[in-house]
Amino acid sequence: MNKFIDFYFDFISPYSYLAHKRIREIQKEKKIEFVYKPILLGGLHNLAGITAPALIKSKKKFLVDDCEMVARKFKINFKFNEKFPINSLSLMRGILVIDDNAKDLFIDKFFDAYWSLNSDLDNKENIIKILKEINIDPKIFYENISKQETKDNLKNITQKAFDKKIFGAPTFIVNDKIFWGQDRLDYALDEFKN
Amino acid sequence: MNKFIDFYFDFISPYSYLAHKRIREIQKEKKIEFVYKPILLGGLHNLAGITAPALIKSKKKFLVDDCEMVARKFKINFKFNEKFPINSLSLMRGILVIDDNAKDLFIDKFFDAYWSLNSDLDNKENIIKILKEINIDPKIFYENISKQETKDNLKNITQKAFDKKIFGAPTFIVNDKIFWGQDRLDYALDEFKN
Image (cartoon, rainbow over all chains, first blue to last red):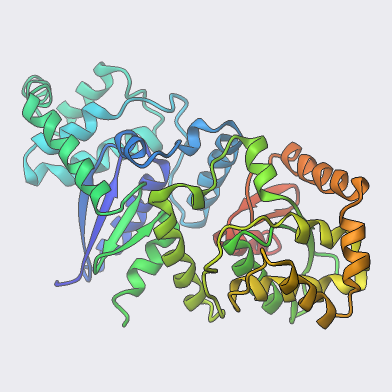
């Protein structure tokens, strides 16, 4: 495979989840490699001077209906989490401290937990339970995400994304072109048709 | 025809233009009726507490590229207007004062002028030139759009849209469901498949 798409995401973003589920389907064909790039969406929005749609009352109701509609179209299990929004900082930092070969499963598990199984991921006990299920030692996990190095790492990654003109999630990058929103996944894939 | 889609738009919105051009293609099949609903997008954004993407620096560059990409996909003539944004108030009020049978042509002409022909529609002379081309008397036009009644009318229409939970343009309404963004035109059409 020499076709790459960078996929910038945050667990807190429902459209990132929907894009992720579509990506997992596309990956089965093994034609295109997706490089998952965790960012802190709240931090990116701050840098970009953007108010998240979920925080705008008039958009929030639409957001819920719209996500459900997109999920139905692509036959994705989806339930808008009752505890939304939460702080996704621990989980986003988590991706940076676990073993590379654990990352896919970690991402699958926590995306599904939050956007399909309605888990309360504000509750540390629920996170610990999932970590144990996927054989990650919670004690080491929490030690590692508390390190200043990890905090700086996520901050730097988010800053770098902003420097690349990324301002939201999900964002796909192909051939240095920015595709923002799960609606643009098809456009990103079209890049390989030329 | 008994299939209706309400289409809320403002000339200032490039995605409204792109949706409009796609609608004109769909209308050729004469299966679905589109009811054009002019609103003042700036006023709607104020009501909804939304900052227009075009006013957010980090989104503006993307916006231009993205519109061009969508235009290419649907083979729509498009050029991001060099004088963007302008105040679309006169033109949006204009739709409310011209004869019903002149509306389609008026909408086509001014959408094309701004988003395909790069016309400077901040310049009244350019507006007058187009009005004459489509046999609308500029004197009567400007008299009518200056009436308090017309101003109130556009304001009320925009307020009513907001009351219906509409917060942006383009917006499609089918069966009381809200579809926001030109990306949702296909979803709106899907409503008739059930």
